[in-house]
Length: 334
Image (tube, rainbow, N blue to C red):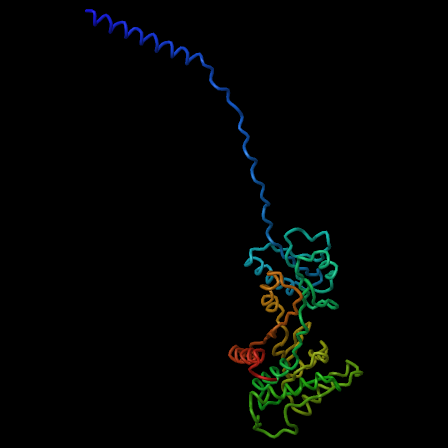
């Protein structure tokens, strides 16, 4: 009995002690919450998508303008760049992100623009008075008259019966004389000794040279000498000679023509034009330009345009294009 009483007292004591501890704990105030300062978010610049601008004058013919716009647009898309086409450009238009400007004549003030934006690359396409240097690149003088003349001689011999071909050129012009020699070599490259089946009063190729001071209205008479007297059937026209009136007249005679400049209106008998492929030049130079390399002199490969498939069939065209590739690769010397 005594033991039970003692255990009872101990239990009561422990209960009272626990309640006291709980009361003490409940009376202890909870710590007040404090504001913890969070670090500010890091600010990062929004990346600017690079921009390329094509300056194409409003007076440019729509077909040519559309060709250049499509070319540069496709290149910009492939490089993840924005594209704009403008008729003019000022220093105020040099926005952040601008990486490349391609300009057609007339000169939009490339020198001043390039100086105002030294980190932007500029490519001038046949813009007179603009030279390569610094962040300005230019399209080279791409006449390549010897290659064009060689190819014209090859093509003329390919499509003309008995190789009755000729050339019209300015008199006392050193480049024209070299071109005629290349024209002869092109004919020989195709046909070797070029033996004719019939007798003609002249050997081929023939040429007629026109004095520099000759009246343009008399050019028709010079072409008649080649066509009527010398029996020439295909004529290569040196660029200084190829006026619109002349090519229109030759078109009425039944003779064929090859030139290096596209006439304003293609006449009958126009086989093809051999001229620099500016689009290909832009495509070739694009990686260097968008890579920040400036001061380039961009060489245009020659290409064929204005082809009449009734005069130069697709099979013969492939033959001619193959010879052109060999010429520009240096496998054939004109």
